[in-house]
Length: 333
Ligand code: NAD
Ligand code: DAU
Image (cartoon, rainbow, N blue to C red; front, top):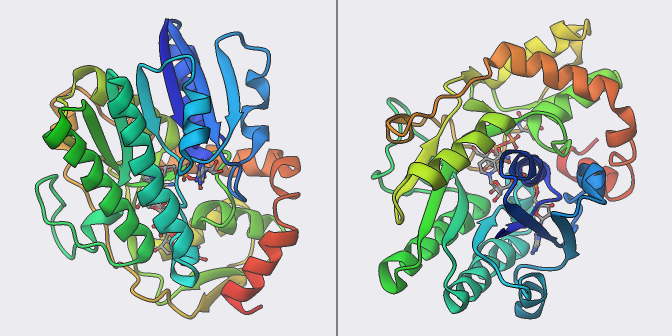
């Protein structure tokens, strides 16, 4: 059995990867380590309870004791998905981002070094490149993060690399574009706009709505991580993009139209400070390993909208309490 640690496995991408890992790798024994912050949701992993190849540990990646508790039985591969992930929250209060995204990654890298793991997979992001007006970011391009979230992720990305360069730890680093799909916390733009539309609430579009993101369906991301690990080279970075560049305005209109809601629900609001205009990735490096995204954007969006429409019991309890406090502060409504 290969002993695998998945941090942040109660979150959006981590929970998809935990399911994928157990299904695609019958020889893997999976431990999820998750602090269960506001973004971590045990419901995302509920169906795995009772699976003899799965166990859940509640704990903090920035705590050595918690990490040791999670890997006490040994560990062969570490996937680090755990992070504070929302750009707007990082602008309001950066401290938790530095603690988890930077210090937490350091804590895991130290544990990995002490144990001599087979692989350490750092889940980074395309945001580390900053905005790109034309063309596509290459793995070798300079990093120009512009907000505390992306700067923390850039620090973690390069810290992970330093453990390869200095200690020969077999580190693999992915830089993915914007993920979407079921189980995404409704602070991120697609689930926020879909659930607001379902509730006939305004969709708060930042600035002029012309910012561009490249959308990657979450299951395509999971498959790319495996390709990187199985066929990639330790120490390398791999861009993972969906090949679906869309302006935010177009996405907003598609969501309203697909749900049969009026365009009058669209509300232009004050822009995000330092709002990156466009992200776009050159994915030829992972392409040469044989990976291509499989889910076309229109199909993925349709399925995502259908999932939120059918799973109100998943998101309605989230959009209360702390969420509402955050929402009112963020959007001043
Ligand atoms: P998410 O916010 O949905 O989930 C993050 C998870 O990490 C939660 O379960 C949370 O409880 C857990 N967590 C937070 N702090 C922790 C800590 N100190 N210790 C242990 N667990 C902790 O995030 P996501 O969107 O699924 O993103 C997962 C990873 O992928 C992150 O590293 C993120 O930077 C990266 N990423 C995300 C996207 C995207 O579009 N969502 C794109 C590229 C990369
Ligand atoms: O690019 C990868 C990154 O994608 C990940 O690393 C981050 O963890 C993830 O949160 C995401 O960051 P973004 O800032 O791109 O995602 P978000 O969903 O917050 O915003 C997407 C776009 O939509 C962005 O241009 C801002 C805009 N937006 C967002 C919100 C929340 C709005 O117009 N209104 C909103 O209310």
